[in-house]
Image (cartoon, rainbow, N blue to C red; front, top):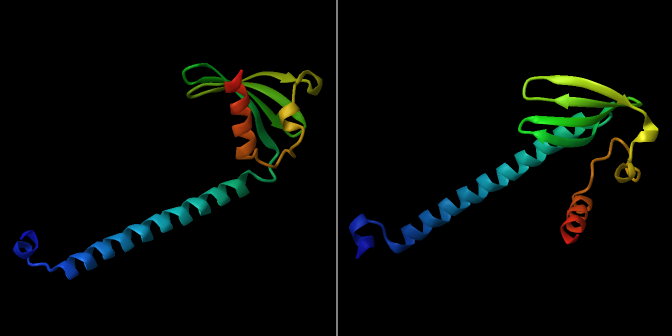
Length: 124
């Protein structure tokens, strides 16, 4: 009864549904490809750089302490909403870099390694 009042037959309704589904799948696939492209371009920008964030610790809302490797030096920085403060240089022998020992400085941490760390922490 409803279909006859709108003037569409069942076949036309199915074609409309199929067309909307195709447009949805096209947009979904396009967004996947764009996200993948952006992710790769960001990874390429981070590769072969001399700066790496080693660790971040939140001390207050919008305030962090970060340990950053710049070249061969490790620096402690105070990061705020609109400012960055140099705190001190940290000698290499005072840092615990066990989580970074199996990676090269340029390789990102794998998701499965992060998931394993979170799983270990939640089990304790």
